[in-house]
Length: 516
Image 1 (cartoon, rainbow, N blue to C red):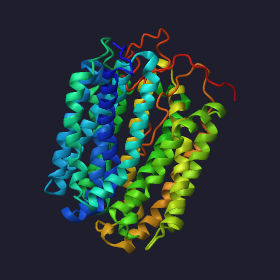
Image 2 (cartoon, rainbow, N blue to C red; image 1 turned 45 degrees about the vertical axis):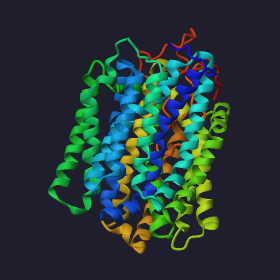
Image 3 (cartoon, rainbow, N blue to C red; image 1 turned 30 degrees about the vertical axis):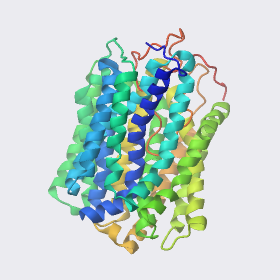
Image 4 (tube, rainbow, N blue to C red; image 1 turned 90 degrees about the vertical axis):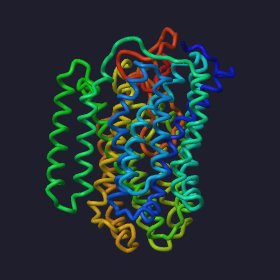
């Protein structure tokens, strides 16, 4: 029952629990890129293994995140959240003790399963637990602390890699889980949605979607070998993708109902999301390597170098969201990707012995301002482009789309740039490939800007509004939920028939500027 007050002791414990849980996944997703060169040297891994170290996690997370939200609704949000934390910690322990790259990749895939269970649950617990009068403030505190975690992540990861070692990037999750789980079991009330909406239990759809991504990713990463298994994987990826679409069209309760794409704006904004987050993921994967392999930065220096982007997002994302509400989303969704493209192209100046103040920092500041400009309006437009009861589902699809785009980009960009298996060990070869890859990222961003300019319109006055005003993650847009604006009674009843309960809570009926 949603009646816990934020000022109470229980309210503070609930907030601490959700911050600890979400921070595990958020920090881990931001620090691994910084640790990749050291992992590769210690495990004698080639570039493909480093790609899989990133992609194995994104694959299972993207494929199962909608299912994770629905499981929480059906079997209890606290129960699934705690299961996700324990699962994530166990997989992190396996990552930390992995004797070789194969075990590390398998453990990362298991980490993604845990992330899919705990990520939707963190904010959903706030939505289900807090009194409606305190919910907005609780969300603000949760998202603010999460933004701080995202900002600290690269710095912390670099310090761990250069100090105790890269394995502690993963092992650190174990004590966090040991702290989080007892607090959750003692202080967080259980909640769920008793109404039956089996959409989230479309296990066949989830399996087909994940398999399609896995086959395509394998084909892209291993394409340079030109082997028969690569060709088979490519065909299998297309075939399972087609099967996924057919299953979703025919099921009475699909995970991703095709009718939600009847909204042209929703479809267009998700394509913008694909382009934008493919560019972001490719950029952050390659930039962390470029700074270390080519420019000679330590892991700590590389992690610290990337801090301006997350700091700008932490400080300015709420203001960007407010600006988007006043002027409409089309300008931010056009200008933001253009700024990001400029930042990406400025990174071409980062080569051997690059100066941080004159070469690296300007690129990151422009990139950060572009991300600030577009991320909050992107989320708002996704929520506004569908009916209120589908807002949680729409947010989940958009989040999964961003992660899938990142997965494909990390697999495809090295292939497009002509990186060989040992490219990250050869500064000259990697620098040449980086110079090829950055214009590709910029082209994706400019395509997103053009699409946004031609398709995005101001939403209706009674649309759903985002609750996460502060957001500093660079891997995916924030998860929101169908509860925003969906509960005019003010009862705060969690969940709803339209989606998997992905982190929803709301300010019902708040007016939105209208007019073109």
